[in-house]
Length: 64
Image (spheres, rainbow, N blue to C red):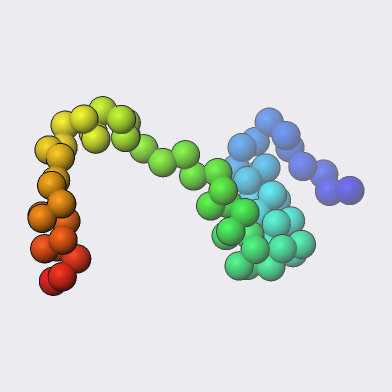
């Protein structure tokens, strides 16, 4: 086992990324990491501030 300083966040992150890359490969590592993207903002609050579009507006956008 490696001698990892568990009190050093940089070292933990570096060793963890290396382990993910070795086991999952580069694409698998990225897909794994994407699962933990928490996003940002407040969808509910932002959605309430947007005006409702009617059917005709949506139809016109789709026909562009």
